[in-house]
Image (cartoon, rainbow, N blue to C red):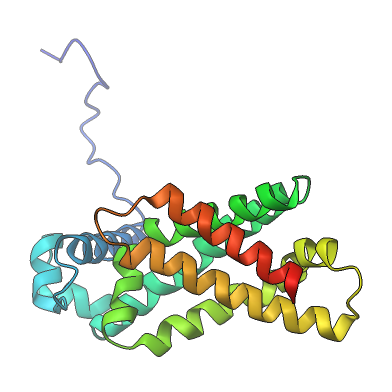
Length: 210
């Protein structure tokens, strides 16, 4: 007697997922598992063995998709960079129609939140090779520099293009450094919102006084 609910049996084997889709799913599983391990043990470097165990796959499966743990971390870092770029671009877009003070808060809040969201990956760079974080930020900053000119250009119409470019370069670097400190290194008892407000005022004052 057939089951009252669900598809009727046709006597045929269920169709298997295409190989390409299975590969995509396995790769995604490994990346998700690696991120979960980084969140659980931020001070400990993950191994391929730990990754295989956490993902419930064989060690051979891990090596089929990634040559080593560094390759896994590189892909996670690239994903984080893309997400942070998107978040910052959206924030700058919203800030375009705001007053300078509010606009700066919007940018600082958004970038800090983006760093917090990807903290598990970014801390790997901070604890092992800080230069990698600097290179990652360069990837984020480059495409956004034209947008990053909007607030400084509005506040300092007296500057020529060369001086404005220099100011934007300094301000974007300072913004990244301050937001990353709030997101990744903030003491437990510190007031996050107050830090964001203070940072925004500092950056705004720096632009106005430059």
